[in-house]
Length: 130
Image (tube, rainbow, N blue to C red; front, side, top):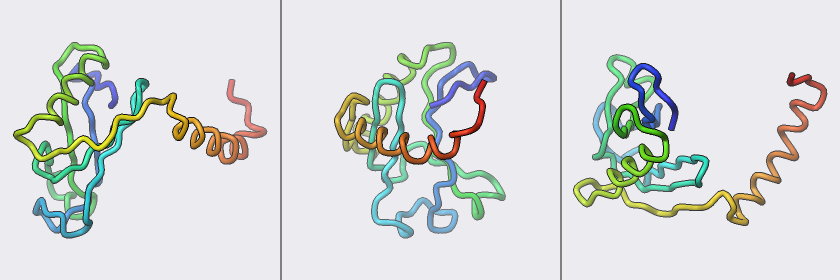
């Protein structure tokens, strides 16, 4: 999710989703998992490419499709998240919630500690950040 100043909303946006040609088919992969993290946790959905998939004009064949789910204009991220999750969980689409993982989960903490200590520190070791 990111803040879109022009629309005054918090959309959930996935870009560069490569599909079979211009059609919404799963031929290029077995399962599409959409993962998004927010300050409250990590959400994982299985997506069957029916809900909110759009093309990108002439660049679709090169850069892929987009999946965009939006809340309403003028709402905070928490409210937008509730609306987006409710839309994803609607029985009328084919998205399936796989997991909602807290950032306090031991697996998340372990992964974060492992990656923070190894790559980030090496890259920014002698770089002034102020």
